[in-house]
Length: 415
Image (tube, rainbow, N blue to C red; front, side, top):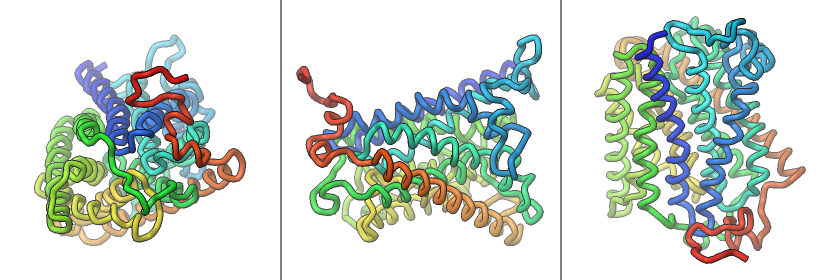
């Protein structure tokens, strides 16, 4: 066992796990006061359920050697982390290239958790907590695990898949698996579930911007585990990913704030916090494959595109409550496709031709279609059976009280 490598991956996994409580702060501050706890509970609920499911069949569906049509791994091959891949016959932990495989299970589980939690922001203030939890279990099983297998587990979208004959697809830490996947799901759910009462008619402003900014800062910290940790034992690449993550994020803040200043006359704290997330999302698929200068361009464009995209919900009429579509889908698409231009050695700007660009567009489109179809089927079935929406009275009085019997800032006793 390589103790330094193992310690690095344990630390990275811990950083990524921190991102989900950080996301709860980010989303909670953006919510209205009467729904802050529900928003945070949707994130914590995802942590609880996915953390269990991943051990039972999530790892196997993502990384089992027995692949089903290149789309997902056999869920029973390593069910409950059995099957002899992670533990030897004498019960000892299998070590692969210096890393105990059980550590990789923990690292990958944190990715699954944060991906599902991201979707919650599109559904703020109007859905039953019980329906959300059922959706979490179904979606992580039918959309996230297959996408992880297709991209990272040797499936259709990996460097062993059919498109690799044109150019090897690149998704360093989750542009397709995490952000396009979650962003498309958020859009589909927002359309199927419908708008909040009063959307577009009454102000629905964030109730606690300091909490949102704190959440953004902790997301940035945790993202170093997300991106630099994805280099595994290639610590030179981890260093590049760390610098690129910082640089792209900083540039995205500037890009977002410039657009706000030109469009609205003021640069806002919400814009700065949202710019942080847009930059982090865009650099995720590219962190180990672009130069720091390329990361500046990547982040700057991401900040501009996302700041413009968050207004589309008012023009197109879908209620993406906390801008999951405008940030994660748009910045995730940009980061994935931009690799075709910016990847050092292979990108168009480096003389690599159009092959990589074509492949990056293809894998982005496949991710969009796959996530969209799976999410739509799950959402429609749940809507037709147990229903998504809380009652009108519950939504008006506050989903914290109607779903959890609590209030975020109530110092009294609830009868």
